[in-house]
Length: 238
Image 1 (cartoon, one colour):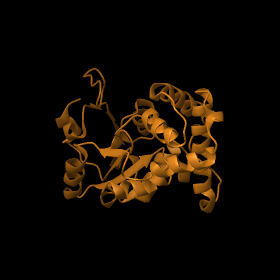
Image 2 (cartoon, helix red, strand yellow; image 1 turned 90 degrees about the vertical axis):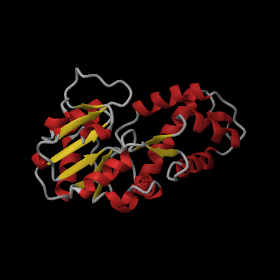
Image 3 (tube, rainbow, N blue to C red; image 1 turned 30 degrees about the vertical axis):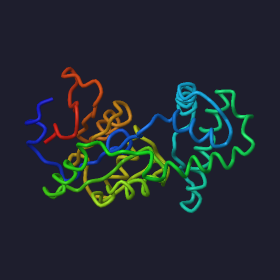
């Protein structure tokens, strides 16, 4: 991708994905699950839990609750994640080893809303500050739950964003066009006035592109010049 061509026409708003784009986990999910399980007297292997978690997560429905009252969404979010955690340990054949799985699930769920498990990618703050100085509005579009608000605050990122659109509240998950349209309405803009950056080729790049938004695929691990609008990091966008 030519950096020069990407910066010729500046957008009114830049939307960014959250996890994998702005921040990520310091340790693997399996390692974190392993540490918390040990507190409850359950010994296991992190690699086994990683594999089981991926399977459980992929088998779950989208983290979106259309038609659900806003007051009950946080309850639905916890139930959704409790099912993922439960299925993870069921697949690992460890579910029956817990004496109080409900407390374990709640403690694990709460932990991921804190600053502790996360780190911000080093290119994020300089880019957000640069875009903000240019008068570009910034928004988040994420297949996340309400804990994202707490995480963004804890990581000192919330101040940069005019809007945060999450799938659980929007009722639609990326790559569905609806979630992008909901985000655009918050800025009262048409899609041609916006950019979107995310690390998932299908959910972020293709999803935003199908919604008419200029889309960039953030591929930090295996950048290739063969793919259009691909970024090795945020700084390469200028």
